[in-house]
Length: 403
View: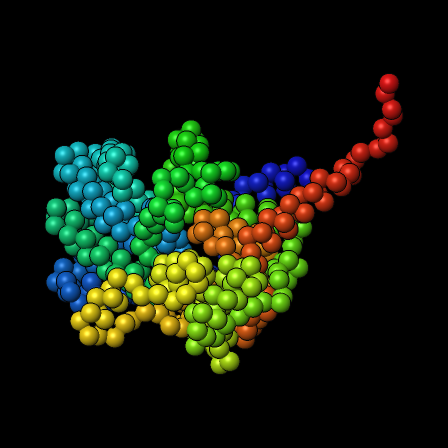
């Protein structure tokens, strides 16, 4: 490849690859967004003044962000509504105050950018809105500050409504809300285990502040991408080990109708802390653990079923005790599971952060075929690191003994 070709190739932006489905989805969204915005604006405002545009050109740029990059901070509702309204106000004001249209356009766009950045509503198409307010012609100038409401305000609100409906209907969450920080399941102030090592949010914020440029991606999405990249890297370091290779296959299970006495006996007999709950029809339907027993106080220290305080009160009043009798009464029904081909690195976040000690492994019919415990996971990861450390480096040659 010649130097000229290499240079020209470097001019092409390195945009993240997208699937054919995503490209079709974005294209269809832009079509629907512009069509609905134009039609509804025409019906709502009418065509009394044909010279005043009912659909302004910047909406095309907004459609690119709203449907092709809906998670972008530049495409969020406040960015669209606030940015367009501020830019329209500044553009109209500059057009009225400055006689030279070129100077007015330059001042309007620059002040609009500064104001949007200060107000946290930066929206690139809003620069075109400010420009349109200055250079839009006599009809726009005659509309004055009414231009902020129509067509700018109506267009912005309509395309936002379409973006909300279309993106959520096609599997893209909009607006993109910053998720709440995950709570520690142990109710302590410590960060989650996976957040104590590697890149933490504070590191990310510090680097972004040092970068000191507008980044067209929210910090939480960037953090999630980094987290997923770390998981993929860990896959390589763990040697692509799957659950099938480390899981226990002879798994003790119980049914929902199994008595608590029998379930407790199995836990003690096998010296385990959890039992998958299965049925013939549905396969895995839950899990019962020692924690479930303690939480429901179904057993006394001697292994005998006992009544709680509430049950004793009901007995005194002549009612029937509601002490749990079967596994179905105390089991955890929402249970996470894995497939035999699942990489063990994917089990690290739920086991570390959510406090899960056991991960049932099911087949394609939801039948339990094994279980992975924290001990299995630690042993597998340790073995993978040991084997990796034992392998000699490829570029290492024979070494001479040095006295």
